[in-house]
Image 1: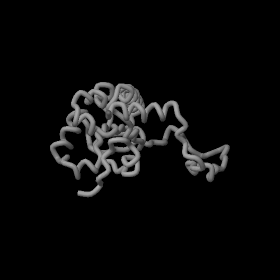
Image 2 (image 1 turned 30 degrees about the vertical axis):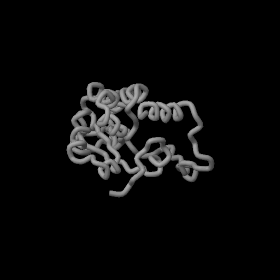
Image 3 (image 1 turned 90 degrees about the vertical axis):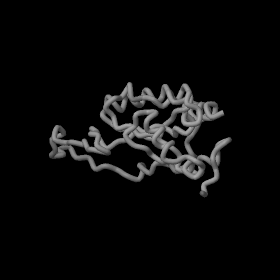
Image 4 (image 1 turned 135 degrees about the vertical axis):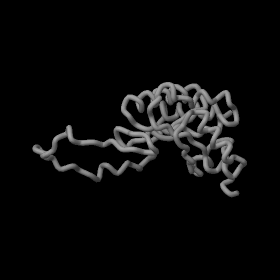
Length: 170
């Protein structure tokens, strides 16, 4: 069931109209003033930073994407390759499915494609109310050779999914 739900979500993003009516990014409210002579040496610009002990070429994290199905594995691989090439960090989608069904672990395992990146594992914080603890957090980290773990909060999204975890109280 989880694999089918993940595939459905990914296909909706790839093939469907996922834009909310009337909601924008807000960028249309900003205009940059043109400067023909910006008085800057582009070679001197350094966006690099260190995050959780890893050096990034820019403060950008490709985060909390996918996993748990074949299409998710392909997307994760491509994002990991991009992160490695560009020197960015990457976060995976919720690994809950792989903790429940270890056969799904490979859909999250991208370290071989991106050995140098800052890689973040992921679990839903709500799982900590439902029996997941430190051992599961460590298993999630070990499963993907992650440098850190994100605990995501997405109650509204969960409530809209079939078979989702919706008990957000301990």
